[in-house]
Length: 210
Image (cartoon, rainbow, N blue to C red):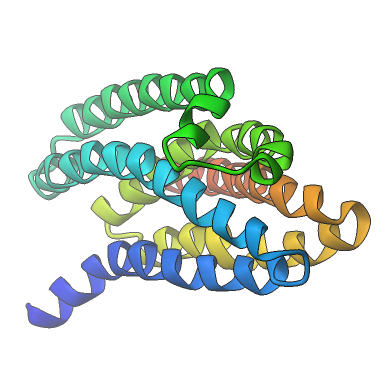
């Protein structure tokens, strides 16, 4: 029983642990530009966490509901919880995206950003905010897999989000677009991860039907 508890909780652990590694990897790329770029990403990450962790709270609240109904064999309520949870996550992420896109200067003002930081930070925040919606949907799918004992698929999505897709995207886009490429890497990685998550979802459903 203890082994199963650790196994089913592993995706949540990976999701939280990889955030720290992700910040470290991004800073390794930003250090080549300036300390201001590193300071900006630190400020942006706090704003992102405010939005993402709020949504993750909702997602983690859906997890035991989906898990309980999966164990009880109540597939109708399992899928209902997944659908309603996905709708709420999508709505919250849209609001978070709009807030960052519409008010980047005001948000940076909370961190007493310098003119140098504002010169690239406003556009950078808008670029990275485009990844929020994809992030919420892929995390919800990952949590569904976690609830239905598809731990490998759940972990794969989290690894793709914050490492397997993000790090190569950072390296390639940094070479192509320099500092802007680092910001572009986030929506690119999140979009690719969501596509993988949707393919996994379709594959598992087809497998269950057959």
